Amino acid sequence: CSILISLNHRVGSTIGAGVYVLVGTVAREHAGPALAVSFLIAGIAAALSAFCYAELASRCPSAGSAYHYSYICIGEGVAWLIGWSLVLEYTLGGSAVARGISPNLALCFGGPDSLPWILARHQLPWFDVIVDPCAAALVLAVTALLCLGIKESSFVQAIVTIMNACVMLFVIIAGCYIGFQIGWEGYKVTDGYFPYGVNGVLAGSATVFFAYIGFDTVASTAEEVKNPQRDLPLGIGAALSICCLLYMMVAVVIVGIVPYFAMDPDTPISSAFAKHGMQWAMYVVTSGAVLALCSTLMGSLLPQPRILMTMARDGLLPSFFSDVNKHTQVPVKGTIVAGICAAALAFFMDVSQLAGMVSVGTLLAFTIVAVSILILRYVPPEEVPLSSSRRESMGLNQEYDEEKGRDPLGDDICDTSQIKDLIATEAMKDPLLEKQHKGKMDEMKRRKIAAFSIGSVCLGVLVLTASASATWLPFLPLCIGCIVGGVLLIPGLVVLCCIDQDDGRHSFGHSGGFMCPFVPFLPVVCILINTYLLINLGGDAWIRVGIWLLIGVLVYIFYGRTRSSLVDVVYVPVAKTDLRRSSSGFMS
Image 1 (tube, rainbow, N blue to C red):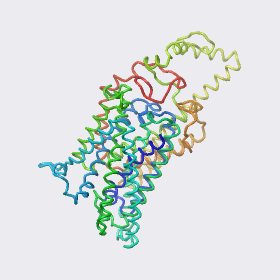
Image 2: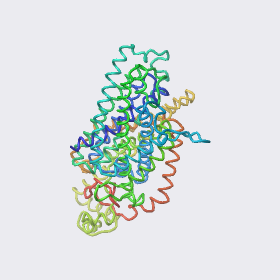
Image 3: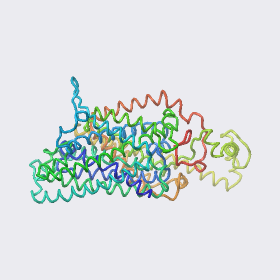
Image 4: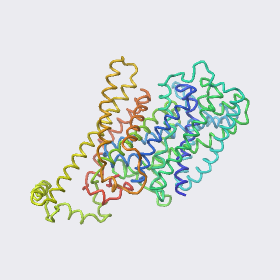
């Protein structure tokens, strides 16, 4: 049952946005007839990230998702920026989906201008802004449903997802019928298969990455799944396969029956059938689009209050967001605040402004998760911080205080340097201790080499992708940048392949769950692809996201850092802690 719930959230929260909102925009502006290739590239990048997500979700299931993983493996500062980016991702994702609902809903009433005046879009005088009351109202309605509880919302979403899958199959079958009748005229355009070139396809991949958000949706429900070690990896993998396959099949069909430049950016699928005289099919597709987008809207708004709850538990946000309703077991206050913010954005902003910004948050989270896998395998944290309240609840206070100053020989010594000196002295007398001491020094050396190599890989990826994307540079500087990036990347990757992984990875979190294959190659390729897509998102999206991240840095400096649960903690071995959830003062 829990596998179906996680699968339902993943499929239901993703498929509407990818098919009904982005197909027309990306085909017209970026990919052209090669739209399916853009979906494939984004799907491959998402699949690589899925492997990384699956291991971390299995080891450390928590409502914090990517924020939780980066907190454990990298640190509070980076985790805050990831959590802040996820807040942006989910808010904008819900808003973008809601903006895609009203044009499809209008078609059900007879045409683009058929909605009642109170729900129809209007342009504000003296402003170049088109407001969408229908989108805002739908966001508020879904927010109210999510406040009832995850079981209730999952039941509604399951029904909608099944109906949506049936509509998708209808689109593929009916679209193929039309395509064979008209000879797939969409692929006979004079501009060729790649009218915007390879860079256009890659830019399209970066934009449609918005269609693959949802790993966080599954991972953020980890505390509400009975067997997360089994269910989360299966839910993530199965849902990704279903979504990517449907995306590509629909893209192939729709681009084939309507030339890319003639697509309607708001209602591409419905309009495609209408242009070929299948009005009745237009109503079927439009009904499916409305239901699918409502399901996607639910999936987009579900994780955000849980991310806020986890960050509030760690003291980085006001405790207001960590309150959980006793009856519904839902962070109702955070859900309401998130819903109001998403409704406001859906009221004022359009899809083209929102999609790129959402992809930035998604790609940043996926990149950090891949980096976290490298850290977990090669230099996993040996200790985690625990607050006094958390130590008391786990019964570790007295035990840890006794062990804190005890050396291997059983004497109470409080000074760490004295412990090291004593071990070194005793090692000269006892061959067994000398061997253990040498092994400890070798392990410290291995960890330093591994940490340096991971840093070299990340820096090399950044330099390489930035240089490869700067096509406006002269040839020589571009080649020099690519060479420098390769020199940093390749040796670091070779070193990681040659040295042993840390034995502590087996005791970190829950053992026996899913393990990411082909480490370090798979995480490094994941980092490379995601970083390249990030750089190709465009300056406008980065300017908007940069402003958001700057606000996040200021909030962390003046509020989160001073109230963090890490202010009053002691560090205890990982083996003595439970990494499943993030409570106040607990390493999450």
